[in-house]
Image (cartoon, rainbow, N blue to C red; front, side, top):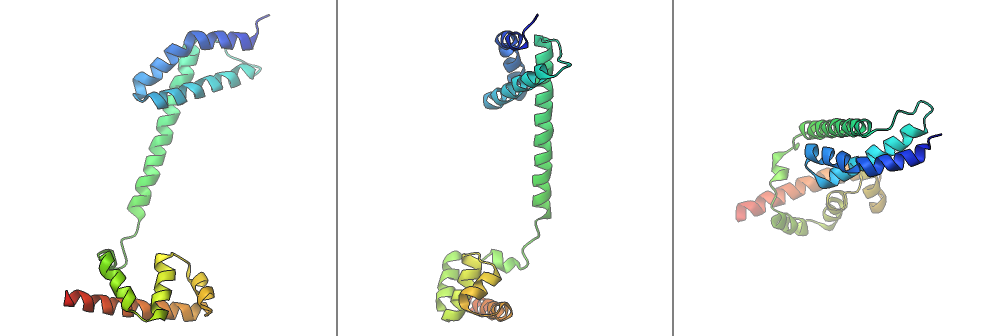
Length: 167
């Protein structure tokens, strides 16, 4: 009576170079070929455990490798599409002026603001805290904090433009 475990080990010894070579020749990346080879033989282990286990052969395991490679390419294409969609869906900045701020000038402008405006802007935009957390830290309501941030942004913009006009 054949032993599936022993048969699989023998197939592994026999087919490993062909499987790895097949994958490497198609993907061109040794690390990826190694990962896909491992996935291929893990799939072979799962297959021999089934009641309807396939006949083990090098051709069969290379076929499994081909499926693993196609699965990888599909996954990669799907990930690429998602990334492109995220980039394409990224909204443009609400105000292009915000993108062009000079960091040093922005720091100087921030230092010139009153302490309540400076702390509100720092917590919200430099520390990236949500408005609710800024409100808690400043011991204000959310509505009052939103109003403070509007005034602080206006004061910052005015001071920044004045400083830019002086330079």
